[in-house]
Image 1 (cartoon, one colour):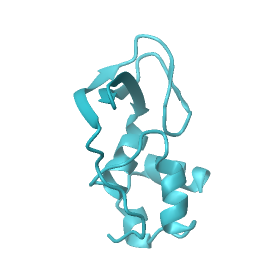
Image 2 (image 1 turned 180 degrees about the vertical axis):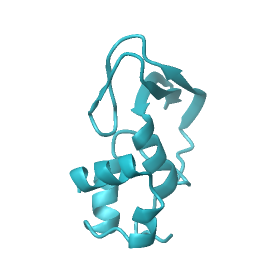
Image 3 (image 1 turned 135 degrees about the vertical axis):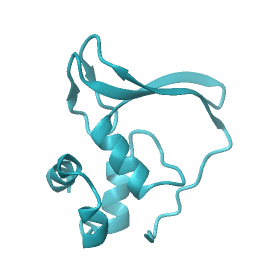
Image 4 (image 1 turned 30 degrees about the vertical axis):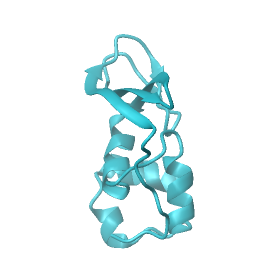
Length: 111
């Protein structure tokens, strides 16, 4: 899938840990801003960026979308803005159809 955006991995960002966990309390997805409820699985990433440590929490639907649309890298918290810029609201049908029903619904909601 081609995209007019040039998203590259940043040499200043180092992934320290990435795993899928079950929420013991409520969180907010750093991509779509939806609630991650207690008991739901989500991805947590611990990174250092330019020497500053941070933790990022992402719902599994956004993880799926991010992996499908930006396999070579992304800027955390900017995926939906990048999707709007890359596709201008017109995602190719074959790409859309490869997403889960939940990811399709979120994409429709966000675009």
